[in-house]
Image 1 (tube, helix red, strand yellow):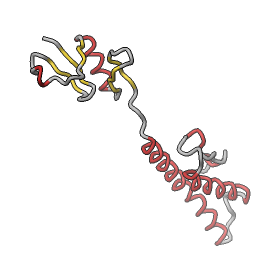
Image 2 (cartoon, one colour; image 1 turned 180 degrees about the vertical axis):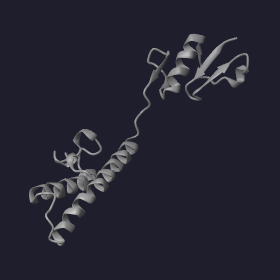
Image 3 (cartoon, one colour; image 1 turned 180 degrees about the horizontal axis):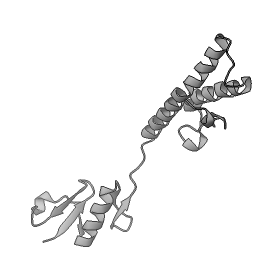
Image 4 (cartoon, one colour; image 1 turned 90 degrees about the vertical axis):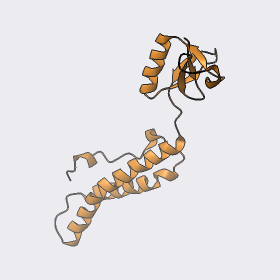
Length: 144
């Protein structure tokens, strides 16, 4: 009995269960300890691929740039939504003549930050999260 792993099929084959015709041509023979290691890595989300030396290795799956951009837009949308109440409260307080919770300077910083968030997807650095717009330092102190 021999065991194989096929990178093209992303699966294991065993001569006790599979005929030679059923085993893909790219299948590589693996030992039981190798199979156990590969299964553990695959279960953690890693991919098994053939290394330059021709052996199997576990690697991180490639990152789809579209997925990264989508996730970054979702982050941006959530931050905009979570800041909108603060903008609305300030505007309402001004309209009814009540004392404002934010200073005029803080309100301006909030508006500038929210605009930076809206502009973020058009930035040349998008979707690199290390270049996200920076929130005013006082923003986290505001309770909703």
